[in-house]
Image (tube, rainbow, N blue to C red; front, side, top):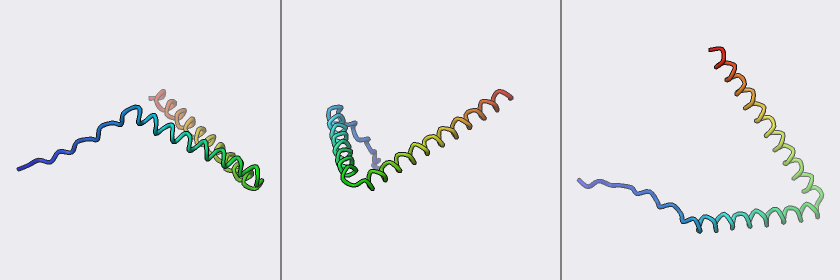
Length: 81
C-alpha cells in the first residue's frame, strides 16, 4: 500500500513578501489619491466618505466598550471565586 503525504508549501522568500506588500501599499495609496480627487470634484462623494468614516469610528467605540465591560465582569467574577 502506498501512502500519500501532502507537503506544505514552502514559505515565500522575504524579498517576495516585501515586494508584494510594497505593491499593495502603492495600490492603496493610488486609491486614496483617486478618492480624494473625486471628493474634491463632487462634494456628495466627500460627505459620503465622511459619513462612512464617522460610522466606522462609532462602531469601533461601541466594540471597545463591550470588550471593556466583558473584561471587567470577568475580573469581578474571578475575584469573587
